[in-house]
Image (cartoon, rainbow, N blue to C red; front, side, top):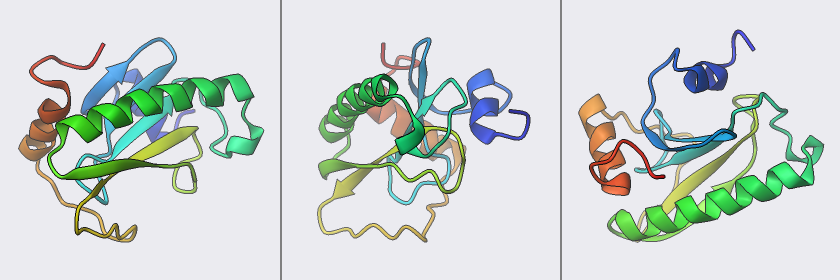
Length: 136
């Protein structure tokens, strides 16, 4: 899809802060997060963001991957109580799951967006994956 921001991220046309990638999925930090470490699990195939229209097998794969990434966020980001999963897809009509780390004594305001520099984004990425380019 020509105007799809996620397709542009997948193709490399736009830069991203990669956490994980395989032949089916791209996992990146959200560039405009509501909380530190907000992560997107994105299907590389341009599919509807409405989960009820997506094949069960794809949803199962994405859920399993999301679970692995959530455990990584929980263990690597300081102060995270647990990571929440959100599947709404109203902003971008391309299948994706949002992983939102829940921090102690911090409420998530879905209308708020953190303004983070490239250096801050890269530092968060390194907290999650270490010095490697991405999790494998």
